[in-house]
Length: 451
Ligand SMILES: [Zn+2]
Image 1 (cartoon, rainbow, N blue to C red):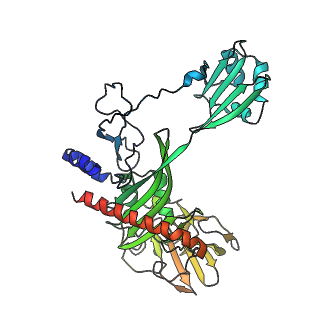
Image 2 (spheres, rainbow, N blue to C red):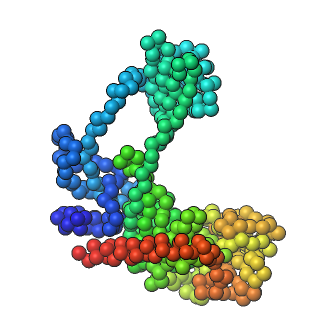
Image 3 (cartoon, rainbow, N blue to C red):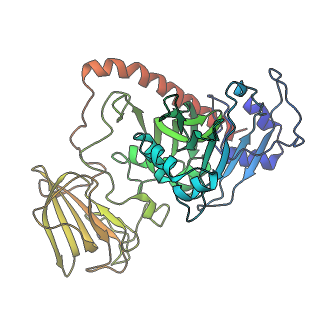
């Protein structure tokens, strides 16, 4: 059905849609945030139970990142709900919190005394939440026949509303009414043409999801240096709705990344961690890159020139060209064995991991750790700089096994932990199911590109 809708669109639109690769492939047809009115804007009264045709419309957003993301919005006709609100014939009056307001001012404006306010606030733990009001929020008051404050309503957040009632004993009691968040699954797929970030945006992912994806695969793939054109990713994730309105994206449930022809899969287990389909933890002893890819300026640099000699040269480390001040993290748990400064290395930090591994970080602008200090994987140890014998700011990273320089990409590293057998039995069928879905969604994606 989605494919048909796409075919009917003019060519230009088709292009945008293909660019926007998260066409809810195979899974659900979901209204997306920023719902816009469908073309027929003269909203007629809609009948319950009747089917209405949905219009596909493309909404160009104002660019907030490098590319201008394109969103497809499918609006479902809203049917006004006629519920039995009449049963509780409470007449609420709304008061908006303005700048400089406090509860006393608002209560006075609403026609209630400071005594009432005090009684209400001291009623219980929930009612104290009223003291955290912010400008722009709304307090709703209702009076009873005696003119007393009988009900108060305060929206705490998207899901929770604080309701305060005056009971028959003349005391205030409160409850928090929560709306349920409905979770739906959605799939997005992307093909990398310029860099990972742009591909993520084109796939309809938000910043958090793009970073999340890089974190999930950050032990296997060096997102700063090793992403190439035609790499692909597919993910299945939750989207969250309240009363049919999209409120945001939730957990990534499963993901796939094809990097330089090698396929990696990650599936979320009930323990909150990601595992390969075989049940091995995605977490490993060493991160692939000690620098976050988002700071790396160039897109693809398979043959990087040496920053000093200017020649392409296989040297004993990996260089990460990033601006001065970019955070550098320890690629694994360990202990700082050197933290100093020399003429060639500039500011440097060496870290020992277990007995046989050492990682070295050179040309740092600032060192953030001291000799003898224990560090965790991902912990900040310094910042990228241009100290020592260099011509430009970059991190020079070395990986040594038993004192010998090795390529961290190809060196055999300790295997990651596997799920225990009992867990594995539960995990495997779910994982296999996701693998099938990931495969199907990737293929669907490719077939759309070849339309
Ligand atoms: Zn280097």
